Length: 484
Image (cartoon, rainbow, N blue to C red; front, side, top):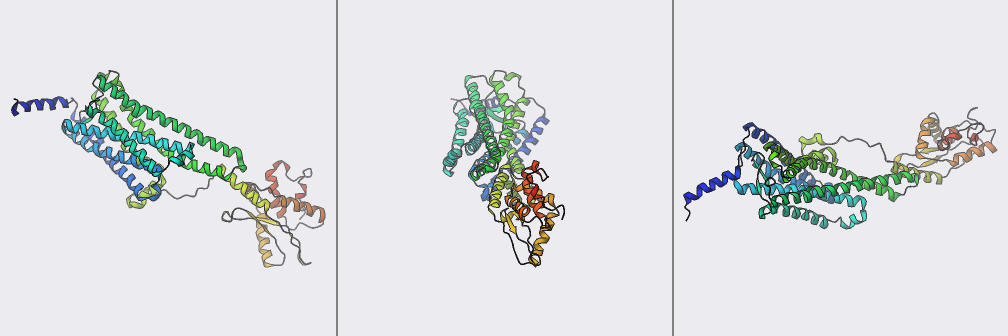
């Protein structure tokens, strides 16, 4: 029988062979410890703020943000389980938690790292369905199905993380021997097969699907924008609503795309190191070349909160409202004066139909009332951007106020011309009135020239080559304004 005394040296020898300290200067461990503290602090705090913002703001608790919330949870757990243990080991300058601790540490790192990557894949597929296949997205976009998709993400990640614990590869210390991961260094069939399958089904294939989704999302957005521009003023309201919805979804997709790019850049060096070892060239890798990519990969947990803080206005506003110390995150309110081509085209077509259907009245009165031309006053945006007719009367207070307002318009013909051109108004009423006045009242002096200054430019803007001239069919719009 083995005595207790004889077993203790064997356990100590096993522990020493498992650790395999590397000969690096002490300051290298301390520098790594500083980076690990920064990564852990930012990762835990930042992702906790993301979860708090989504939980406290009902507008952020929608189905697409369920995946964002799940990503924040996985990144939070990655920083929470990896950074403190990594930091303590750096102070000890070796792995200090034994073989069991190494397996638990590596299992958590694999589980949360794989969950983040597959969650980004789920976000890309969700955005792809919403933008390119909206009908299918309505069918699939339920709370139950979204929850099921998130559950599948975790089950898929759990399967790959448990494999080294049941004999397919194993978990060992890596780099400076202060962190643990799966054994991609030992050149065995189990290790090589696990490394290749993990890289393919967790990194390269999901990355290819993500690129495919974003390529077709971009093509769908570009096609819709070109269709709206080609249709011009005849664009339908349903098309505009569809384009606006797609642009809103595309904005969320762009945020997710930035997150994906940063995540891929973080894990790419680590993937390269594992593939070099898989090819049988692990001997050319130094402890630093294995430790630095691992630190960069673990830092992927800290980028997402900063991306949301820069791009997502609702996230910033929620945090600024919750925490007074974060008020600098609140976006400065600014009036969006630019409008899309599609929205302006649709508004122009509606205004043109409304103004064409409006009526212009002739006003006749007693001898002390003189016939006046009719001015078209553009209403404000709140009134529907349509036009109304304004008859003016000489001798009445109301007529004087109308006259004053119309004369002010006539003193700024360029401004009126620009307004008329913007609304796309082809004023047939003004042309018809000018023709009647020229035929039946040639002797009537034009004491009120807004017909020329206000109504005529409406047609000139549509036909700039037909500006009033003796040889132009629009000569009657000149009237007697020149002699008045």
